[in-house]
Image 1 (cartoon, rainbow, N blue to C red):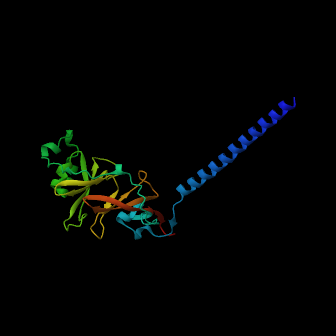
Image 2 (tube, helix red, strand yellow; image 1 turned 30 degrees about the vertical axis):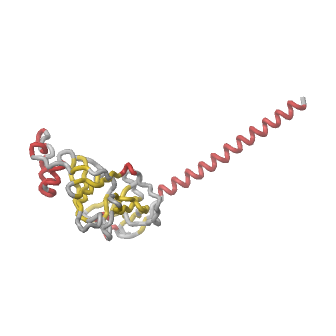
Image 3 (cartoon, rainbow, N blue to C red; image 1 turned 30 degrees about the horizontal axis):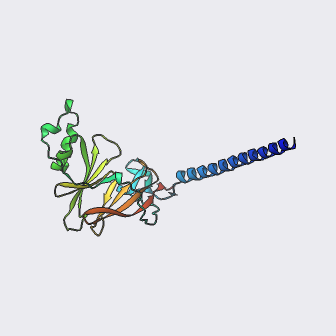
Length: 241
């Protein structure tokens, strides 16, 4: 009888300890989730006229009568540089491929009821034969020229987007000697003062309203190599009261 009582007490103690363990861990989990949610929801708001900013400085906002009433600005907090690269190798490619061939009109204006005709004509007028290489599947959103490998010769940085696509650009190409030597699906590729490599601007989540990443690449031994990156947090501005 006494042995049974001792066994019962031992089992009861283990049961109570198990319940206590679950309660404590659940509490910790809740605290962690609350902290994460608060962190995600917070964005610095400054009482600054958003119309002081323009162009690529503005990520998104509300606009009317050619003025911004509020805007999210891209140049907020910037973290210290780190050599721990989080940009996945799947987000860029440096396999050298040939630049697409120039297409004739009969291979571009192929849609029924002349759909896309005005857009295609505008693209060719603005970008010439470069547009003809990508139409009609893709359109060009920008073409820049700057040196990325310190040879004193500018490469072409071409941003393309699927026809009538959202979240452009879908791909950015670095072109040298009529070959694509690097491509990425980042937001943009920025020039460096040294003309050695470039900085890829990208986001961890699609259309992240809170910030972006910037990964610096250099050209070394025939390859573009990521050497450090930083996180940039956006901040919010609104029209002065």
